[in-house]
Image (tube, helix red, strand yellow):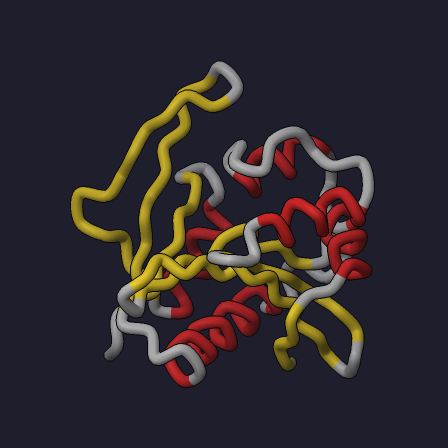
Length: 162
């Protein structure tokens, strides 16, 4: 598996990999607004944030299998956002492999001091994936917010050098 910067075609894959609009809402935590109708529309959203966010695609033998966004928080801190794996390739360990690559990239290419992400408490598959990669729940970083009329609990997770 290798990482590369995402392009407009990858944005169309991102949308294709979603099961439905509710999965988009969960994936973005409402921060991307209404689900875009096209890859171009999603790509434009990502490009409007390119000053602080970069989108990456994970490939195996030239075939895209996953994507994530890396947000620069400043001072050597980065946040991994909008993590998605091809819906037809889930449960193969690709998310774990992609997150390992993301951490390595942050450490080796960006000299990151801190790496974090946020995960919904109810998303146990993602939570366990991140935990397997070495992320830990940050102390006192459980939060609750209203999302689509429901209370949602999220954990902030951090990766620490071991």
